[in-house]
Amino acid sequence: MKTANYSILNFKESIFATMTKMAQKNAAINLSQGFPDFDGPSWLMDLVTEAMAQGHNQYAPTHGVPELRRTLAQLYKNIYGLEFDPVDEITITNGATEAIFCTIMALVNPQDEVIVLEPFYDSYVATLNLAGAKIVPVTLYRNEFRWHVDELAKAFSDKTKLVILNNPHNPTGKVFTREELEAIVGLAEQFDAYLLSDEVYEFLTFDGAKHLPTATISKALERTITISSAGKTFGVTGWKIGWTLARGQISHHIRMVHQFNTFSVCTPMQWGVNQALQRLDEYLPTFRSLYQEKRDFFCKGLTLANYSPIIPQGTYFTVAPIGHLTGLHDVGHCMELIERKKVAAIPPSVFYLKSREGQEYIRFCFAKKNETLEKALQNLKSRL
Picture 1 (cartoon, one colour):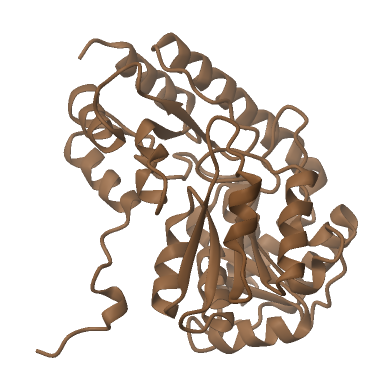
Picture 2: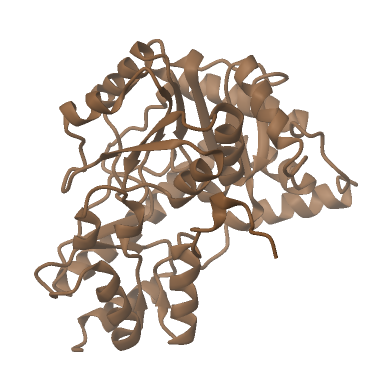
Protein backbone atom coordinates (compact mmCIF):
# COMPACT_ATOMS: atom_id res chain seq x y z
CA MET A 1 0.00 0.00 0.00
CA LYS A 2 1.11 3.57 -0.61
CA THR A 3 2.20 5.58 2.40
CA ALA A 4 -0.11 7.74 4.43
CA ASN A 5 0.31 11.49 4.91
CA TYR A 6 3.96 12.01 5.79
CA SER A 7 2.98 14.42 8.56
CA ILE A 8 1.28 11.71 10.63
CA LEU A 9 3.82 8.91 10.23
CA ASN A 10 5.58 9.96 13.43
CA PHE A 11 2.37 10.59 15.38
CA LYS A 12 1.91 8.54 18.50
CA GLU A 13 -1.10 7.95 20.70
CA SER A 14 -1.88 10.92 22.93
CA ILE A 15 -0.30 10.66 26.38
CA PHE A 16 -3.75 11.22 27.86
CA ALA A 17 -5.17 8.19 26.08
CA THR A 18 -2.11 6.11 26.98
CA MET A 19 -2.23 6.91 30.69
CA THR A 20 -5.99 6.41 30.85
CA LYS A 21 -5.66 2.96 29.29
CA MET A 22 -2.87 2.12 31.71
CA ALA A 23 -5.02 3.27 34.62
CA GLN A 24 -7.90 1.09 33.47
CA LYS A 25 -5.65 -1.91 32.93
CA ASN A 26 -4.20 -1.61 36.44
CA ALA A 27 -7.42 -0.53 38.19
CA ALA A 28 -5.67 2.71 39.15
CA ILE A 29 -7.23 6.00 40.19
CA ASN A 30 -7.02 8.25 37.14
CA LEU A 31 -5.60 11.67 38.03
CA SER A 32 -4.01 11.98 34.60
CA GLN A 33 -6.58 13.15 32.08
CA GLY A 34 -8.03 16.61 32.68
CA PHE A 35 -11.72 16.13 33.24
CA PRO A 36 -13.96 15.94 36.33
CA ASP A 37 -15.28 12.58 37.50
CA PHE A 38 -18.52 14.32 38.47
CA ASP A 39 -21.18 16.16 36.51
CA GLY A 40 -21.61 19.87 36.05
CA PRO A 41 -24.64 21.66 37.48
CA SER A 42 -27.95 19.82 37.10
CA TRP A 43 -29.70 22.98 35.94
CA LEU A 44 -27.42 23.04 32.93
CA MET A 45 -28.57 19.55 31.93
CA ASP A 46 -32.15 20.75 32.27
CA LEU A 47 -31.46 23.62 29.88
CA VAL A 48 -30.25 21.24 27.19
CA THR A 49 -33.20 18.89 27.73
CA GLU A 50 -35.48 21.88 27.33
CA ALA A 51 -33.68 22.93 24.15
CA MET A 52 -34.16 19.46 22.66
CA ALA A 53 -37.84 19.46 23.63
CA GLN A 54 -38.20 22.83 21.87
CA GLY A 55 -36.93 21.31 18.62
CA HIS A 56 -33.33 22.56 18.53
CA ASN A 57 -32.06 19.28 17.13
CA GLN A 58 -31.01 19.95 13.54
CA TYR A 59 -27.80 21.44 12.16
CA ALA A 60 -26.87 24.73 13.75
CA PRO A 61 -25.58 27.52 11.50
CA THR A 62 -21.97 26.76 10.66
CA HIS A 63 -20.70 29.81 12.57
CA GLY A 64 -22.78 28.92 15.63
CA VAL A 65 -26.21 29.61 17.07
CA PRO A 66 -26.67 33.41 16.74
CA GLU A 67 -28.05 33.74 20.27
CA LEU A 68 -24.93 32.13 21.73
CA ARG A 69 -22.64 34.38 19.71
CA ARG A 70 -24.54 37.44 20.89
CA THR A 71 -24.29 36.26 24.50
CA LEU A 72 -20.53 35.79 24.12
CA ALA A 73 -20.14 39.24 22.61
CA GLN A 74 -21.95 40.79 25.57
CA LEU A 75 -19.99 38.66 28.05
CA TYR A 76 -16.57 39.68 26.74
CA LYS A 77 -17.64 43.31 26.68
CA ASN A 78 -18.98 43.23 30.25
CA ILE A 79 -16.10 41.29 31.82
CA TYR A 80 -13.07 42.37 29.82
CA GLY A 81 -14.12 45.47 27.90
CA LEU A 82 -13.49 43.66 24.60
CA GLU A 83 -15.87 44.27 21.72
CA PHE A 84 -16.51 41.62 19.06
CA ASP A 85 -19.12 41.58 16.33
CA PRO A 86 -21.17 38.42 16.93
CA VAL A 87 -21.96 38.16 13.23
CA ASP A 88 -18.43 38.29 11.81
CA GLU A 89 -15.97 37.83 14.69
CA ILE A 90 -17.22 34.96 16.88
CA THR A 91 -17.25 31.33 15.72
CA ILE A 92 -18.52 28.33 17.67
CA THR A 93 -16.31 25.25 17.33
CA ASN A 94 -16.26 21.62 18.43
CA GLY A 95 -14.41 22.43 21.63
CA ALA A 96 -11.25 24.49 22.01
CA THR A 97 -9.21 21.77 20.31
CA GLU A 98 -11.05 22.26 17.03
CA ALA A 99 -10.66 26.02 17.44
CA ILE A 100 -6.90 25.53 17.79
CA PHE A 101 -6.82 23.23 14.76
CA CYS A 102 -8.82 25.59 12.55
CA THR A 103 -6.76 28.61 13.60
CA ILE A 104 -3.43 26.95 12.86
CA MET A 105 -4.57 25.47 9.55
CA ALA A 106 -6.05 28.82 8.53
CA LEU A 107 -2.97 30.93 9.27
CA VAL A 108 0.15 28.79 9.01
CA ASN A 109 1.93 27.82 5.79
CA PRO A 110 4.65 25.18 5.48
CA GLN A 111 7.95 26.42 6.94
CA ASP A 112 6.34 29.34 8.75
CA GLU A 113 7.90 29.67 12.19
CA VAL A 114 5.58 29.26 15.18
CA ILE A 115 6.67 29.96 18.75
CA VAL A 116 5.36 27.51 21.35
CA LEU A 117 5.92 27.86 25.08
CA GLU A 118 6.97 24.55 26.61
CA PRO A 119 5.49 22.67 28.38
CA PHE A 120 2.58 22.83 25.96
CA TYR A 121 -0.81 21.23 25.36
CA ASP A 122 -0.01 18.40 22.96
CA SER A 123 -2.51 19.28 20.22
CA TYR A 124 -0.56 22.46 19.43
CA VAL A 125 2.48 20.62 18.14
CA ALA A 126 0.48 17.87 16.43
CA THR A 127 -1.50 20.40 14.43
CA LEU A 128 1.60 22.46 13.65
CA ASN A 129 3.24 19.34 12.26
CA LEU A 130 0.23 18.75 10.04
CA ALA A 131 0.54 22.32 8.80
CA GLY A 132 4.25 21.82 8.05
CA ALA A 133 5.31 24.60 10.40
CA LYS A 134 8.77 25.07 11.85
CA ILE A 135 8.22 24.93 15.62
CA VAL A 136 10.34 27.21 17.79
CA PRO A 137 10.09 26.20 21.47
CA VAL A 138 10.66 28.64 24.33
CA THR A 139 10.96 27.08 27.78
CA LEU A 140 9.05 28.13 30.88
CA TYR A 141 11.54 27.29 33.62
CA ARG A 142 10.60 25.89 37.02
CA ASN A 143 9.49 26.73 39.64
CA GLU A 144 7.80 29.97 38.64
CA PHE A 145 7.60 28.78 35.03
CA ARG A 146 8.99 31.96 33.54
CA TRP A 147 10.85 32.28 30.27
CA HIS A 148 14.35 33.69 30.01
CA VAL A 149 13.97 37.11 28.40
CA ASP A 150 16.89 36.65 26.01
CA GLU A 151 15.65 33.24 24.91
CA LEU A 152 12.19 34.61 24.17
CA ALA A 153 13.56 37.53 22.16
CA LYS A 154 15.87 35.30 20.11
CA ALA A 155 12.98 33.01 19.21
CA PHE A 156 11.37 35.73 17.10
CA SER A 157 12.39 36.41 13.52
CA ASP A 158 10.95 37.81 10.32
CA LYS A 159 9.64 34.30 9.63
CA THR A 160 7.59 34.16 12.85
CA LYS A 161 3.95 33.76 11.78
CA LEU A 162 2.25 32.78 15.04
CA VAL A 163 2.84 32.65 18.80
CA ILE A 164 0.80 30.21 20.91
CA LEU A 165 0.05 31.22 24.48
CA ASN A 166 -1.99 29.21 27.02
CA ASN A 167 -3.21 31.23 29.98
CA PRO A 168 -3.99 30.03 32.65
CA HIS A 169 -1.41 27.47 31.72
CA ASN A 170 -1.78 23.71 31.40
CA PRO A 171 0.09 21.75 32.74
CA THR A 172 1.74 24.10 35.25
CA GLY A 173 -1.19 26.12 36.63
CA LYS A 174 0.66 29.39 35.96
CA VAL A 175 -1.28 32.62 35.40
CA PHE A 176 0.70 35.08 33.29
CA THR A 177 1.21 38.60 34.60
CA ARG A 178 0.49 41.79 32.70
CA GLU A 179 4.23 42.39 32.44
CA GLU A 180 4.75 38.98 30.82
CA LEU A 181 1.86 39.45 28.41
CA GLU A 182 3.09 42.90 27.43
CA ALA A 183 6.53 41.47 26.66
CA ILE A 184 5.23 38.78 24.34
CA VAL A 185 2.67 41.08 22.71
CA GLY A 186 5.38 43.66 22.08
CA LEU A 187 7.54 41.11 20.28
CA ALA A 188 4.59 39.84 18.28
CA GLU A 189 3.88 43.38 17.15
CA GLN A 190 7.53 44.03 16.32
CA PHE A 191 7.68 40.95 14.09
CA ASP A 192 4.08 41.17 12.84
CA ALA A 193 3.04 37.77 14.22
CA TYR A 194 -0.40 36.48 15.12
CA LEU A 195 -1.17 35.50 18.71
CA LEU A 196 -3.24 32.39 19.44
CA SER A 197 -4.37 32.75 23.06
CA ASP A 198 -5.86 29.56 24.53
CA GLU A 199 -7.83 30.71 27.58
CA VAL A 200 -10.05 27.74 28.43
CA TYR A 201 -9.28 28.06 32.17
CA GLU A 202 -10.02 31.79 32.21
CA PHE A 203 -12.50 31.57 35.11
CA LEU A 204 -10.49 29.13 37.23
CA THR A 205 -7.91 31.19 39.14
CA PHE A 206 -6.98 31.22 42.83
CA ASP A 207 -5.54 33.39 45.60
CA GLY A 208 -6.37 36.68 43.92
CA ALA A 209 -4.61 35.81 40.66
CA LYS A 210 -6.40 37.61 37.85
CA HIS A 211 -6.74 36.32 34.33
CA LEU A 212 -5.94 38.95 31.71
CA PRO A 213 -6.97 38.03 28.16
CA THR A 214 -4.12 38.61 25.74
CA ALA A 215 -6.43 40.69 23.58
CA THR A 216 -6.78 43.29 26.37
CA ILE A 217 -3.08 44.19 26.16
CA SER A 218 -2.38 47.36 24.20
CA LYS A 219 -2.09 46.76 20.44
CA ALA A 220 -2.83 43.03 20.79
CA LEU A 221 -6.46 42.89 19.73
CA GLU A 222 -5.93 43.16 15.98
CA ARG A 223 -3.57 40.18 15.86
CA THR A 224 -5.02 37.95 18.61
CA ILE A 225 -7.24 34.91 18.27
CA THR A 226 -8.87 34.28 21.64
CA ILE A 227 -10.00 30.70 22.22
CA SER A 228 -12.10 29.40 25.08
CA SER A 229 -14.85 26.88 25.79
CA ALA A 230 -17.66 25.89 28.12
CA GLY A 231 -16.22 22.50 29.03
CA LYS A 232 -13.85 23.51 31.82
CA THR A 233 -16.03 26.29 33.24
CA PHE A 234 -19.17 24.18 33.59
CA GLY A 235 -17.62 20.74 34.09
CA VAL A 236 -19.00 19.34 30.83
CA THR A 237 -15.88 18.59 28.82
CA GLY A 238 -17.76 16.04 26.70
CA TRP A 239 -20.09 18.68 25.28
CA LYS A 240 -17.28 20.18 23.17
CA ILE A 241 -18.62 23.72 22.86
CA GLY A 242 -15.72 26.06 22.14
CA TRP A 243 -15.27 29.37 20.34
CA THR A 244 -12.86 31.72 18.67
CA LEU A 245 -12.96 35.51 18.87
CA ALA A 246 -10.91 37.46 16.36
CA ARG A 247 -11.13 40.37 13.99
CA GLY A 248 -13.23 39.84 10.87
CA GLN A 249 -10.60 38.84 8.30
CA ILE A 250 -8.93 36.40 10.69
CA SER A 251 -12.31 34.95 11.65
CA HIS A 252 -13.14 34.52 7.97
CA HIS A 253 -10.01 32.42 7.44
CA ILE A 254 -10.83 30.27 10.49
CA ARG A 255 -14.38 29.78 9.29
CA MET A 256 -13.18 28.55 5.91
CA VAL A 257 -11.41 25.65 7.68
CA HIS A 258 -14.21 25.07 10.20
CA GLN A 259 -16.88 24.68 7.50
CA PHE A 260 -15.02 21.77 5.93
CA ASN A 261 -13.97 20.24 9.24
CA THR A 262 -16.98 19.82 11.54
CA PHE A 263 -19.22 22.32 9.67
CA SER A 264 -21.36 22.90 12.76
CA VAL A 265 -21.52 22.05 16.45
CA CYS A 266 -24.10 20.23 18.58
CA THR A 267 -27.22 22.41 18.49
CA PRO A 268 -28.97 21.75 21.83
CA MET A 269 -25.67 22.04 23.71
CA GLN A 270 -25.16 25.49 22.17
CA TRP A 271 -28.58 26.57 23.38
CA GLY A 272 -27.83 25.25 26.88
CA VAL A 273 -24.46 26.99 27.05
CA ASN A 274 -26.07 30.19 25.84
CA GLN A 275 -28.37 30.18 28.87
CA ALA A 276 -25.63 29.05 31.25
CA LEU A 277 -23.30 31.90 30.31
CA GLN A 278 -26.02 34.33 31.33
CA ARG A 279 -25.81 32.89 34.86
CA LEU A 280 -22.07 33.31 35.31
CA ASP A 281 -22.34 35.97 38.02
CA GLU A 282 -24.24 33.62 40.32
CA TYR A 283 -22.38 30.48 39.25
CA LEU A 284 -18.69 31.46 39.32
CA PRO A 285 -18.22 32.08 43.08
CA THR A 286 -19.37 28.54 43.87
CA PHE A 287 -17.35 27.11 41.01
CA ARG A 288 -14.12 28.79 42.15
CA SER A 289 -14.71 27.91 45.79
CA LEU A 290 -15.27 24.24 44.90
CA TYR A 291 -11.98 23.97 43.04
CA GLN A 292 -9.98 26.03 45.51
CA GLU A 293 -11.05 23.62 48.25
CA LYS A 294 -10.04 20.67 46.09
CA ARG A 295 -6.70 22.29 45.26
CA ASP A 296 -5.92 23.07 48.90
CA PHE A 297 -6.99 19.63 50.11
CA PHE A 298 -5.05 17.76 47.44
CA CYS A 299 -1.87 19.83 47.65
CA LYS A 300 -1.82 19.47 51.44
CA GLY A 301 -2.23 15.73 51.01
CA LEU A 302 0.57 15.57 48.47
CA THR A 303 2.85 17.33 50.94
CA LEU A 304 2.00 14.74 53.59
CA ALA A 305 2.78 12.06 50.99
CA ASN A 306 6.32 13.53 50.70
CA TYR A 307 5.71 15.38 47.46
CA SER A 308 6.34 19.12 47.22
CA PRO A 309 3.62 20.36 44.87
CA ILE A 310 4.00 23.69 43.11
CA ILE A 311 0.77 25.39 44.13
CA PRO A 312 -1.14 26.39 40.96
CA GLN A 313 -2.51 29.88 40.47
CA GLY A 314 -5.10 28.55 38.04
CA THR A 315 -6.48 25.46 36.22
CA TYR A 316 -7.23 22.19 38.00
CA PHE A 317 -3.74 20.73 37.75
CA THR A 318 -0.78 20.70 40.06
CA VAL A 319 2.76 19.60 39.29
CA ALA A 320 5.18 18.06 41.75
CA PRO A 321 8.96 17.53 41.51
CA ILE A 322 10.06 13.90 41.91
CA GLY A 323 13.86 14.08 42.21
CA HIS A 324 13.81 13.59 45.99
CA LEU A 325 11.54 10.53 45.67
CA THR A 326 13.05 8.44 42.90
CA GLY A 327 15.95 7.99 40.54
CA LEU A 328 13.47 7.52 37.71
CA HIS A 329 12.43 10.14 35.19
CA ASP A 330 8.81 11.23 34.94
CA VAL A 331 7.66 8.44 32.61
CA GLY A 332 9.18 5.70 34.73
CA HIS A 333 7.84 7.19 37.94
CA CYS A 334 4.34 7.50 36.48
CA MET A 335 4.41 3.86 35.37
CA GLU A 336 5.57 2.84 38.82
CA LEU A 337 2.77 4.81 40.46
CA ILE A 338 0.17 3.14 38.24
CA GLU A 339 1.46 -0.37 38.79
CA ARG A 340 2.38 -0.20 42.47
CA LYS A 341 0.32 2.59 44.02
CA LYS A 342 -2.65 2.48 41.66
CA VAL A 343 -2.58 6.20 40.89
CA ALA A 344 -2.23 7.60 37.37
CA ALA A 345 -0.52 10.93 36.71
CA ILE A 346 0.88 12.56 33.55
CA PRO A 347 4.61 12.62 32.69
CA PRO A 348 5.17 16.18 31.38
CA SER A 349 8.31 15.43 29.35
CA VAL A 350 6.04 14.73 26.37
CA PHE A 351 5.08 18.43 26.45
CA TYR A 352 8.66 19.58 25.75
CA LEU A 353 10.71 19.71 22.58
CA LYS A 354 13.92 21.29 23.87
CA SER A 355 14.30 21.26 27.65
CA ARG A 356 14.56 18.12 29.79
CA GLU A 357 12.90 19.79 32.76
CA GLY A 358 9.74 17.81 32.18
CA GLN A 359 11.52 14.66 33.29
CA GLU A 360 11.84 16.13 36.77
CA TYR A 361 8.18 16.37 37.80
CA ILE A 362 4.71 14.88 37.23
CA ARG A 363 1.25 16.39 36.81
CA PHE A 364 -1.90 15.51 38.75
CA CYS A 365 -5.49 16.56 38.00
CA PHE A 366 -7.52 17.42 41.09
CA ALA A 367 -10.87 17.89 39.31
CA LYS A 368 -12.19 14.80 41.07
CA LYS A 369 -14.68 13.85 43.74
CA ASN A 370 -13.39 14.26 47.29
CA GLU A 371 -13.51 10.50 47.82
CA THR A 372 -11.43 10.00 44.65
CA LEU A 373 -8.78 12.43 45.89
CA GLU A 374 -8.80 10.91 49.38
CA LYS A 375 -8.27 7.40 48.02
CA ALA A 376 -5.50 8.58 45.69
CA LEU A 377 -3.71 10.32 48.57
CA GLN A 378 -4.00 7.22 50.73
CA ASN A 379 -2.39 5.18 47.97
CA LEU A 380 0.39 7.73 47.47
CA LYS A 381 1.18 7.71 51.18
CA SER A 382 1.44 3.92 51.23
CA ARG A 383 4.79 2.19 50.91
CA LEU A 384 5.78 0.74 47.57
